[in-house]
Image (cartoon, rainbow, N blue to C red; front, side, top):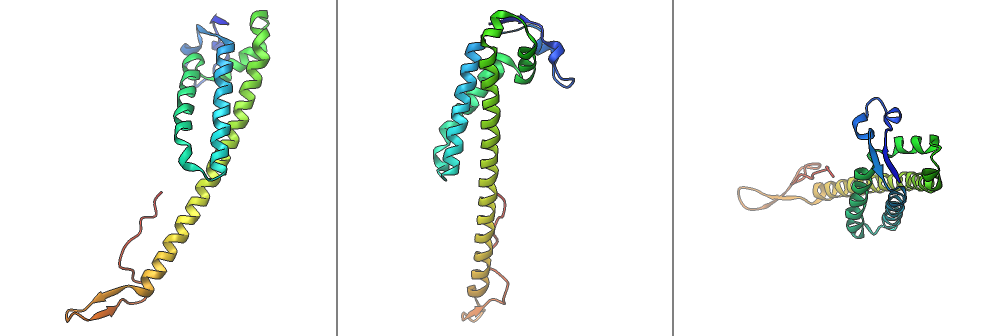
Amino acid sequence: MIRGTDMTEFADDDQGQDALTQLSFDLREVTELIDRLTAVLDEETALIDEGRIAEIEPLQVEKNRLSAAIRQATGSLEPIIDFLYETDDPEIAADRDDMIDAVLMLKDASEQNERVIRAALRATSRLVSALVHTARNVAAEDSRAYTAAGSVAKNAPGTAMGAVDHSL
């Protein structure tokens, strides 16, 4: 248990030091939250990698809930880890290694999750571009319009009858 520990010396310049002045949380509970968040990230990464995007929504809800719980308990994890590396408190040292390992695993899972999401976005963007290109070509080749007399007139090449939104 970390109780009322002043960790302002571990705060970054741009980080609010007030949040680190009297921090109190159970190290084991936070480690468990981090482990659960890592498992959710790993599961989400696997689903994205397998193309099962429709199944990730509940994981995103859980990911947000766990992230909020960790932030509420600890604020930023970086100064916590810096503090854990430097403390000699035997009560804290007993659980320190588990917490540090959990944070390192979370970091790895987060990086892998981000890589898979970025790859999926690139693939989706390429697919949408290919579909738009194909739709324009088909529309340009086979778009028809009617003359004032009611007969069918083919559009000039390259003029599609509609517009396609490229934004994702």
